[in-house]
Image (cartoon, rainbow, N blue to C red; front, side, top):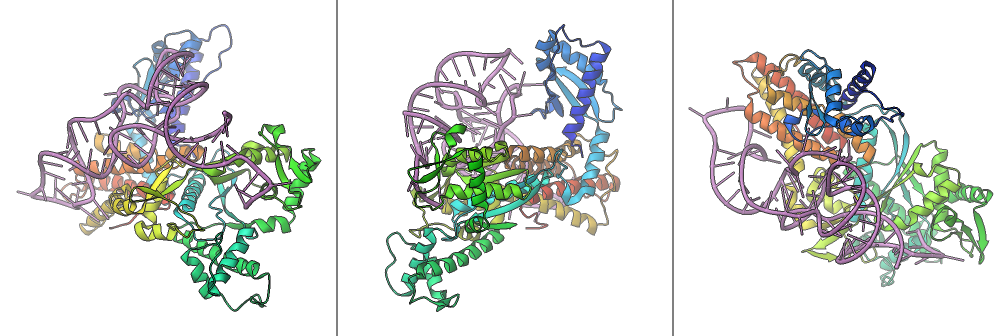
Length: 556
RNA sequence: GCGCCCGUAGCUCAGUGGAUAGAGCGUCAGGUUGCGGACCUGAAGGUCGUGAGUUCGAGUCUCGCCGGGCGCGCCA
C-alpha cells in the first residue's frame, strides 16, 4: 500500500513528465540524468504540507533559473481546489515547490486509520525480506546487566520496526555454553556449596550463592564429589539455569526469541567444518606455525585471522564462520548482528569471511550499540559479572517498569553512549515523556467513554467535516505521516523518529483538546466528527506505542 | 601509532544536504464557573568542539586539528 509520501511523490513525477512533454521544460543537447524526487514536510506551516527541492536540483542541469523550473512544475501540477490529492502548489524561496493536501484526501485517509486499527502504520515492503536479527547474545554466566540489556531493547525495537515495514524477522539469541568460562562458573558454584573460597578469577555475585543452594546432589546422575569433571558438569547445569533466568527476564520486558542457538551446536552439527572447508576450497585458508589462518588481508583486513589454533582447537571466529553458513542455509536474505561497540574490531573479518564464503557482505549487517556506563552518585562504577557488582535488567524493570525503560532506549540513537544512574532513572521515570504520550491516549479514551455516556458516538466518516477547521485538519494531517515514519525508521534501522512522532502527536492533540470541544450535546454533528477524529488519533497513538512494545492505557 | 564511535540549550537528547536548529527536564512568569491540570500559554537559554573545503544551500558530506570513549590476542 502506498504511503502518503508515495502518492505525493508520484504526483510530482507525473507533473514533471507533463512539463517535459508540453515543452515547458526542455533538456539541453546532452542527456540529463534526472534526480530522484525527494519531498519533505517543512518545519513551517506556511511552507505547506509537503515541499520539494526538485527545481533547485534540476536548475543547473536544465540551465534554467530554479524559480522558472519551479514555476513550470507548479503549472504542470495544475492544482486546484477540487483536485483529489494536491489542492494548491506554489513556488517559494529560492525555488522550492510547496504543496497543500486536498482536505477531502486527508479526511478519507483519516477514516482509513480507524478501519486499519492496530495495524495502522504498518505497510507492505516493496521487497519483503526474510531477516535474521541476532541480539543480546550475552553468555549465560550471570544475569543480564543493564549493559547487556541495551542490546535487548535495541534488537527488539529494531525487529518490531522491520516487521512493521513488511519484513519477516527471526529473533535469535546466540550463546556459548561450552567455553572455559562455563567451567569457571561451575567451580565457583561448587566452591560456595562446599564452603570454600571462590577463586580470584571465578564468579562472585549473589546469584552464585543462589545457584549453590539449589544445586542438586547429583547432576545427570553423576555425583559431584568424586569427579574431576565437577566444574564442567556443574557449569553446564548452572549455565542452563542462568539461561532460563535470562529468558524469563527478557519475557518480563516483552522480548521473546524465536531461536536460542548455542555455539556448541554449530560444531556438533558440522557447520563450522563446512564453513572452514568452503574457505579452504576458495583458497583463502592456509597453515602457519601449526595454526589455520583465514586470509583476511586479501579483503582489506589489517591482519590475517586464526581459525584453528595450533592446538587444534577452533577459535570463536571459527564459530562465526560456521554460523554465517548456517544462517544463510535457513534462507535469510539479510543477517543483522546487534553487537556491543567493543566488538567493532571483529566486523571486518566477519564481512571478509562472508565474502570469501561466496555471500554478499552487504547482507551481513553489524549494528553497534554503544556502552552503558553504570554511574553511582555521578561517579562511574565498575560493572562486571565476575565481581558481582552490576545492575540487572530485572532491577531496572522493577524500578521504572518496561514502558519507561523501552522509551528510554527507543528515543536514543544506539551509537551514543549512556551514563546510567539508577537513582536518576528512578527520579526521572515519573517525568519520562512516555507518560505524556500515554496520558494523551488515556485522555482520549476517557473522552470517548464520556461521549458514550452522553449518547454521542463517533461519526462513521469525517468526510466534509475537517476542511473548514484548520485545527482539526492539522491534527488529521499529522496522523497520516506514521507509515512514512515507520518505513524510514526501518530503512535507517533506528527508532528515535517513532518516539519523536508520538510526542509531537500528543502535543498536537492536547492543543486540539484545549481549542475544540469534542463532547458537545448542543452540536451533535460537529461532536460526532470530532469524536471520529479523536478516535483516529487514539488509534495512531496506540499503534506508535505498540510498535515500540509499549502499552497504551485506557486510563492511568 | 592504526581503526571505529561520540561532541547540538544549564542537564538528558532529537534533528532523510534545504527555508527562522527543536523536544523533555530544570529556571522564571502566567492559565481551571465545559469533555482527565500526568495538561496548556509565554520568557530566558545556542560561535551546533574547532579550522578549512565541496555545494545555489552544511548541525548534516570531505579533510585537518582539539576533547571524550572503545578496540587493535592462537581471549570470548
